[in-house]
Length: 318
Ligand SMILES: C[S@@+](CC[C@H](N)C(=O)[O-])C[C@H]1O[C@@H](n2cnc3c(N)ncnc32)[C@H](O)[C@@H]1O
Image 1 (cartoon, rainbow, N blue to C red):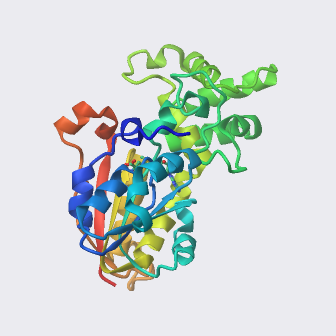
Image 2 (image 1 turned 30 degrees about the vertical axis):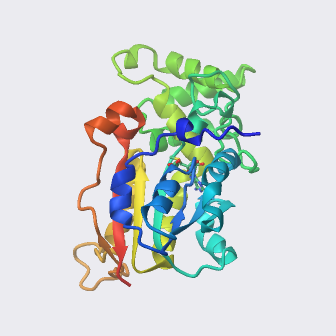
Image 3 (image 1 turned 90 degrees about the horizontal axis):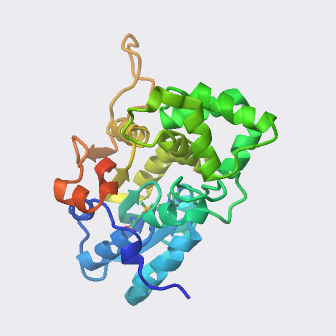
């Protein structure tokens, strides 16, 4: 039996700011596309009478906790174990056509990060798994490192971790494979990265393996590939006047959200010399956050995870 301590397992980030932008009103319908431990969903449910929430998460463990936490709201909450790339299918199953607001609070939860056995963190020694959906049949991080070529591993680490020394790291990972000692655990990966980059990173403030771990997690869960499509789909299912809020935790995600918002707000991305727009720019949203909202000092002191959070929101026009 799960202990109902969801509140302690994850501190919701930019909670008041998200609510201010989503503006829940009596009887409205919201989607929390990354339900996690249900913190944002609970705040939305509490914000106005008779608000209802469709909660989506790909992590069955998180869903278990959220179900307990939100049980008191009865039929006002419906929870789906799904990927938010299936947003439209989930709403069809819930027999909902359009909603008033959607929130996506991306990335991993503290529950996932602090569950040593899930393999997200080098703070614990565990198999290199990193799948947010532990029930899926997609490759684990260890399997990726087993199956990708050296160039592909370097690409993943460079592209998703913005790691300058990606080639050196990939070389050592593949060398370990060649000598019959493939990297299969968090500790082995952390040590391999440290050895690969040697002294080059001695002055770095973060652990030398941080970027490589982030890169593998993003690759395993296909996090960036689905994000842009999700934003388009979310705008499709919003009512006119409905609001979308997205919280990101690293620059790669924030860039995708910023760019997708600009495109949906009608900004033309055609090359300058083209006489007529061919990129299909069409104004469907109004951007509500000219600059992303970040956490204030009080929040970052209480919750260091909030330091990298950026919140952007938009309003659907058509
Ligand atoms: C930062 S946590 C959300 C925390 C939540 N807002 C709260 O206050 O408790 C992110 C959650 O999103 C889920 N998630 C990430 N990507 C997802 C995706 N593509 N589809 C469904 N869930 C996803 C993760 O499993 C994780 O539980």
